[in-house]
Image (tube, rainbow, N blue to C red; front, side, top):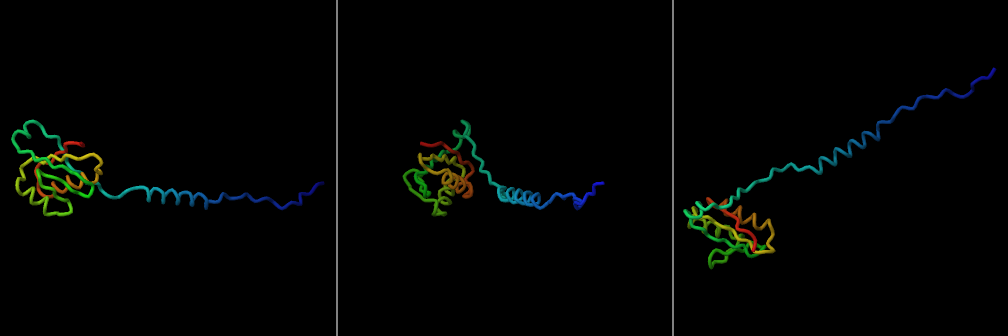
Length: 130
């Protein structure tokens, strides 16, 4: 008669440690890659013919990335907050058409749009890039 002298084998339990590590890494990845800020929107509408006939249009030309812009023959800067306020106070009902020179960053254009809206301009429009 043959005797089995080997010790009995125990079933190995599956370790949950690697699974917990993977879930933790995935949790960190999704937490770090998501954004929790709310984006602001700026309403930009194309002027219609009825709007342009009833209101005066003032062309604002953005000429540099550091915020310099021209209205008529005046060269002003976005760094000077009062300059936008004085321009808008002269005629808040006018349509301010922003003309952007080529090579200007989009953020600078948005800063100028936002500055005119914050100063109280009723209508700000974007002409395009030259």
